[in-house]
Image 1 (cartoon, rainbow, N blue to C red):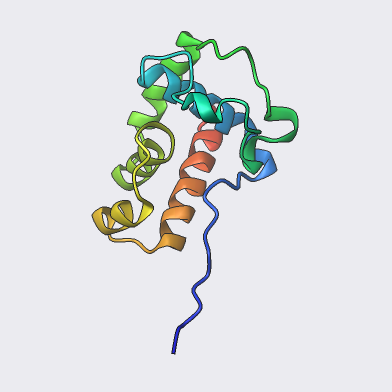
Image 2 (tube, rainbow, N blue to C red):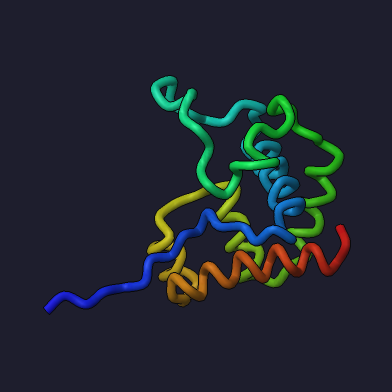
Length: 127
């Protein structure tokens, strides 16, 4: 008998965390050394995923705000290991969530909560 598992949508960003999500996306572009998202030409005209639709759908022209990215990098580096690792996975080096769960010893729900809590920690620290 097959068991149903709860699906985790890692693309969901709570409304009060959208500003920090935008800044973390800028940080990720800065970390990866590119102003342009690495998208196959075949998919460049696709609409953005649900988490960035609406007011974030077509944020600035893709230019990286280096000063803000450095502030975010310093704040992320000051986070505890698991929170820092979850943000690094989510924004900078996305790999299979299952592998990250194994590395951090968390469930999928736990990983989603880590990302959410890490964003909230940055908001609380007023970076």
